[in-house]
Length: 327
Image 1 (cartoon, rainbow, N blue to C red):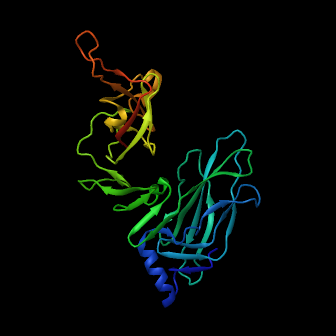
Image 2: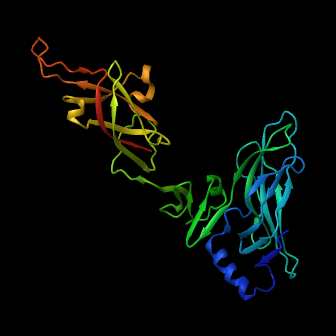
Image 3: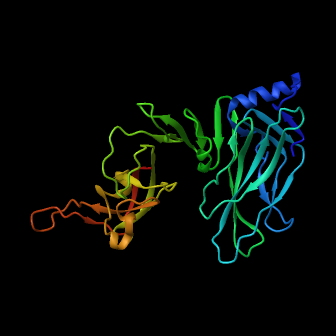
């Protein structure tokens, strides 16, 4: 049980007020420090976890835990699928001063990686999600922990798992999760509300979007651009492979390369996607991680039949200036 409760029936002194008001006004749920209420595994009994000490804010109450809290999750019957249990901070209000409680407990879940049903009657009985834990049949250790905490301050709310969007779902909510900004948007006619990804760090919007190399263009239009220059040598068949500095998370919309140095190339080089998906896979036209391209040389001499011969140039040192757009 929490060592200090601020916000339950009773009094709030001036020192408590300075901490309580900014925290409860920042968001419906949050924790104060990076490790506050962090859930980690322990070796105390079967399927043990520890909720680290710290300050937890929710539903107008600020709870301060001065020590870690140890919990044990229930077992899974032999032959049953893995179960996802949720660690919550359960708050119970009482009109009697000093009788309200804030206690960590576990809500058993189901086989899907989703949040189980919780109490959400603010001012009476409510559960603040802290972590989702996977338990496996015949195993005495917790297999996986998903962090459901969030941090709120100065008008911003951050989290590390998109699962928090299933409980921080009030209209108008804004969340930053792993570099992506999400907004809980009310429909134009005011009859529904849904999460919409509105920005991604380092991303841009495109005025128009055509077909992509890898298909499945994300309609959020949070596109990413990479570009650079490098010197390479084509293989014996005239092919080279460009590995992007960072893999695109979902797909490649477009990639193009240009002869970046007439002196290095020793003549006019043409750069084209290698194609041949049966050999190079998606990389032959532009994949998430790399691009295989062909260097083609146009010599100054006639090939004997009245035309200039353009062919792949094997073993050709060249400089490639390139740009790639993905999402």
